[in-house]
Length: 311
Image (tube, rainbow, N blue to C red; front, side, top):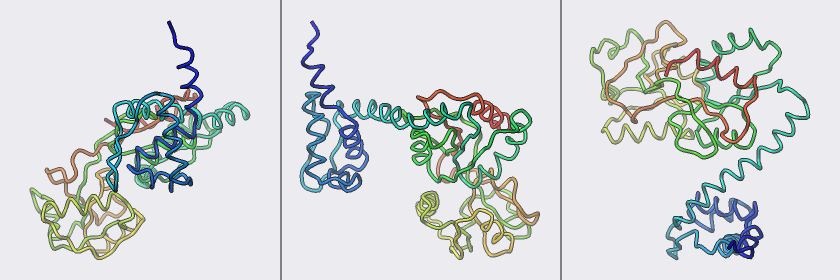
């Protein structure tokens, strides 16, 4: 026989605040950091987690004490999976209401890097505009899969590009193309004539790089270090166009994705494709929200993007 009291206690103890508290602790590994991130006192956040644990009658975290990182129990992992889905649905309500109010969607928002905006979208938009001339497409810059997934789940984007998207209950991902790391250099440089290049050729060479606030640049430098490669970083920038201009001016080489390199902005530039994978396989994917119905215009733009790329 169903226990109505148990059902009521769970419904009464599980609210949005409690779900957000559990997710924050799980993602940050600390009650203190989670409380700071959400703007609560630590005791208030602990009470929210305790409330949901009491309602579910299961511990959601192992608490080692001291400065040890708290970890999810199996029950906690199950709750987090459901919590992400539930919050994604709630966060999408405002976006759905806005679309319903203005009728058929007249705008599609797409998130991604400077490279995807410059190298993937123009060809896709030419095709898309033939059938949908009145639809506004807005391109927004995002530098990580987590940022794209969050914006999609909150209804701030309809589509988003990401490299190597991991499993996430909030989004679906469609592989588009390989975008492995290559070496960008001038055609007349000493390394341009190497028949079988490797990333070792950058050892001791002047290199143009992105600023370290980009996680991808940190990952690149850590990979160089693991391979005992020590380039001399002489310039840093946040702009892909500036990076290519600096290489074209002979101020250094650069590591960039194949997608950007194959359409280099200056005829003086060429690129080398080492056989080894600097950071493992690197695949560009197109992402969309899992729990929201896709509009016809968004589906049409997705088809145009896929038609201009090859998996």
